[in-house]
Length: 177
Image 1 (tube, rainbow, N blue to C red):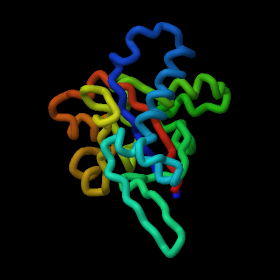
Image 2: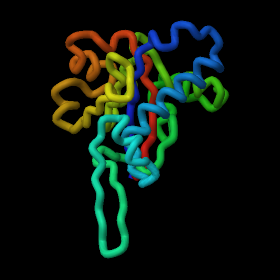
Image 3: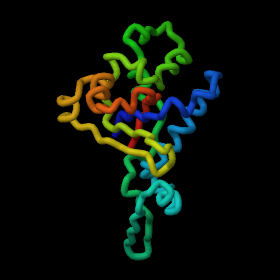
Image 4: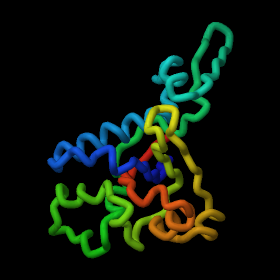
């Protein structure tokens, strides 16, 4: 199964970067750190789970023993993936636009979201004080979409009454499990 995720990172984390390639690399590196908390591939060590504030679960069946991340939601993921065009305006879906240009729309600032951005299945955010213990996940269901909005821009505006996500960078992620 594939699930659509939006990972939100405070834009201030990147304010010192003025080169696009470095910015893209740093955003991806931070998304990797945030997403690691939800790794369900059985590759996460117990110490890593504890660093993220997760209480690991241990299971055994006869001689077999394994460690499980109770917050795990994916086996593997890719940035963009099948939703790589989600935050791109409709006119930008033209075949003549290069893949490199399309990649610019995998991550967008809150102020650049538009009415064509889909609401994700999961919203994952890095909160204050911007450490591994301050990563939050919100599971979005159909009732949330009906209550808060049918596109991500509208949904986020209704979800974020305190406007704390006004200065965030949102990255589209495709998770697989």
